[in-house]
Structure formats: structure tokens, C-alpha cells
Length: 342
Image (cartoon, rainbow, N blue to C red; front, side, top):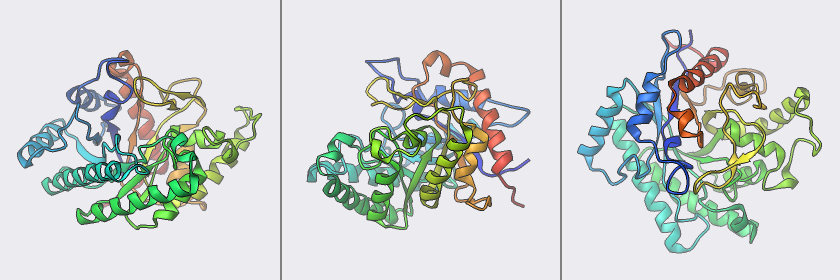
């Protein structure tokens, strides 16, 4: 049995797409209990990736509060990996004051991450960001707005470097400047900093193939038949050859080829259960396009992988079997594309 990459679950699906105009938020304790309760043939999740959202975490916590959070998580037998910076409310391509808000949230998140590393509960992982703006905002001035995003991201990288952190820009069709594989690449190249990489989520990146929110960048043909696995695999190879070299964080996920949004979250890749018959991906096989290079060799570019199940109904999320099924496919991904260390 391989021991790497470590298997993590995300905590933010208890928040994203929930709230007053949707279903109730699930507490951090609930997400930790469900994660720690999952078990398949004696194997459990190794850790969680943590959304630094006020409904779960006090971003301004002092050292004592952060220690208490670490003790809580370790009490469930879990470690911490990547963190999500709550940068929404300050678009990276916005005004000076909006950019200042964005950067301050990055600073607070990096400080939080550094403290967790110093405590010893966070052996690795990145700080996830996005542009906090819509494709429509970006489209008012594509070239100029890409440069604004890149400038804000460069300053964010400077901040992250002060804390020994790496940033990962999330590829998702609802974020301006990263809403297609080509605009994502252009943004990464414009930033050109060693501590900024790409976060790939199998659900979100599937929509890159369809040109969702940017039809001119579609890779699959307009009349694509999902039963044509050969064409799908060629498209995945094209996509991953471009973005894999930038990838520093990875989410295992499933998608049925549609967009979806609940609560205040804009429509994006629909996260499906691994057992969903409508899922378009062969999860275990297709994860290999991100975890292996073009020669089929393991990249070992990150030491943990995470499941992101945003916007599942609460009734589904609160069933322990849901997380057992998710853990089972995560184990299969590790056995197919993992490694062990002495």
C-alpha cells in the first residue's frame, strides 16, 4: 500500500453554497467528525484542507486560539494541508482599496498557515486564492484586467514569501482571468513568480474542455459525444500538458459535464459523488493526467491530494457512507498513482 500522496478531505463544502438563501451551514466539528469517521479496510483520511472562513475559523485568531484549533483537529487524528484564503469582497482587478483588502486577507491567511506549520500539524500545502472577480468583469478589458490581476498576485506572492508560503490560483470557470485554460495560463505567465502555481480540480477543469464562459477556448468539439472516450482523453492530454507543469495542489472530483451553483456561489463545475452514474470522468484513470507527466512518470509535485465536494445537499453530506465512498476512490487514486517512502 502506498503512503503518498496523503489523503485529505475539504472542510469548506460545509459552507460553500450554504447559508440563508440555501441550506444551513455545517459546522467545522461536523466536517471533522465525518472526515475522521470514514474508514475503508482500515484506511482513514490523513487530514483536512481548511477554508479560513469566519463560519469555521477566526482568521484574526491569536496564537492561543490557533493552538486550540490545531489541538481540535489533531484530536480527530488529522493533519492540516492547504488553506483557502477568504479574499472575496476585494477583486484582484478592482480599485486600490479592494486590492488592499485582497492582500490583507492573503497576509492573514499566510500568517495562519505559518502558525499551523510551527505547531507541527501542517507538514505541507499551499494557500489557495483566485481573482475574486467574474468573467464579465474581466471581459471589459481582457488585457488590462489580466495585468491588474497579475500585479495583485505578484504583491500577494511577496507577502506569501515573507511567511514561507506558496500560493495556488484556482482554475474555475466562475473566476475572471482563470475561467478558461488559456486565460489561466496567461495569468500564471504574467505573474511569473516561483511561489505561485495552479490548483487543479478535476470537476472544474472538465469545464475547460467545454469552453464554459469562454467558448473560443473549447477543446472538445461542439457536438461531442461523451461516450467517445478516445476524444475525451486526447482533450485531457492537451489540457494537462499545458497546466500540469504549473500544478501545485490537486483536488480529486467528479463532474457530470454541467455547471451548478447554490446559495451565493456562482455556477461552476458540478461536483458529483464518485458513485454518480452521470459522472463523465474515469476518476482513477483521469487523475493520472495530473499526477503523471507525459511519459507516465509520477511528478510527486504535491504530497497530498484532496477531495472537494462543494454544494452537495446536507442530507448527502451528513451520511457517513458518502465519505466512505469518497475515501474509497481516493485510496484507488493513491494506489494507481502513489508512492511510498522509507
